[in-house]
Image 1 (tube, rainbow, N blue to C red):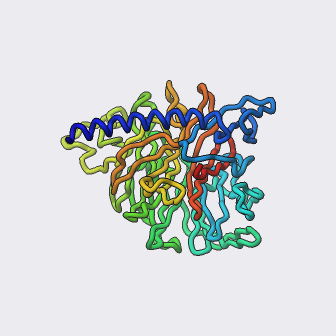
Image 2 (cartoon, helix red, strand yellow):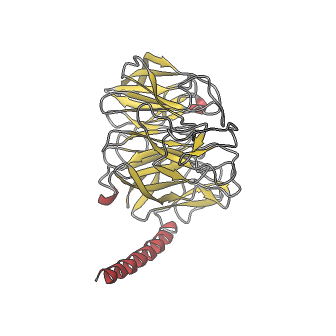
Image 3 (tube, rainbow, N blue to C red):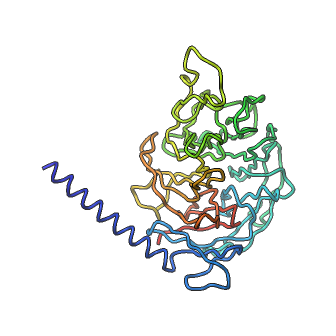
Length: 395
């Protein structure tokens, strides 16, 4: 009886997969795909080509994707104000931009610069009516006026060590109001002089007594709070120049005082003997933490969001969506997509493609960065290659 049931389930699974594969291919050639002309910022509907080369993004067939805003430069971190206005950081221009959608038609009414002239502002967080912004060298708090869309600096919470390869500093608050800030390494692989670098620090909401929370994180560019456990989860990029397949990129669940390995270890407690030539009596990775999930090397995972949306299937709730920015140093490019990761408790069971097509015939037409949900369950995606923000809704 059990064998028969398993056979039936296998057949159903295969038929379902074949159906959705066919449906995905259909969606690619219907008006539920978006088309981005090369070197242009507009999205063209199917069958329209205003003289530019067009390529499509392919999305899970349950959903549709549209352009929310364009001409944004290197659009990076996304957050919402308490009243629902989307904010995006653009570090290359030193700005933070507001993208209001007052008539709720799924298209931004304008792109208004609310903060300018800052040092690569990246991480954004909104709490109790105040906007928090992480620059390379500091974290500051701003008052916010929703009616006039104005941000006014109120206080610098604390300074951060700057310089080096990884400029992105990101923010997240936990349920108790503690503020976590990630700080990327200054190098590909090295021993850092400042204890906060290549780690995540924590303070209270006023910025008092910031301290190291977790270390050994080469570059944890984005953080998210697990709504079930309350733990902070991060994406992490592994080091370069160990070939196409090493080391894996990672998803890590942070614990206070733990060491996540870098620069001595990577992946599931593998010693980086290419960098560290010392000979040890005991395994140097013994007391480091292994990732909860390994991602193919050089995928460059960035933004992550736990799913809590009525527009997504019930069995997807509390799963993860993760943006893979894409490789720059691999013989066969990888990443350039958004994946759905199936989460059970503190483990990730598997990952499947959700949105693909940012790489077409070896050519970059986009690079996804951050993913965030609004109160209506719409998903927003930033793209720092095309300078766009997309909105994804139930199809």
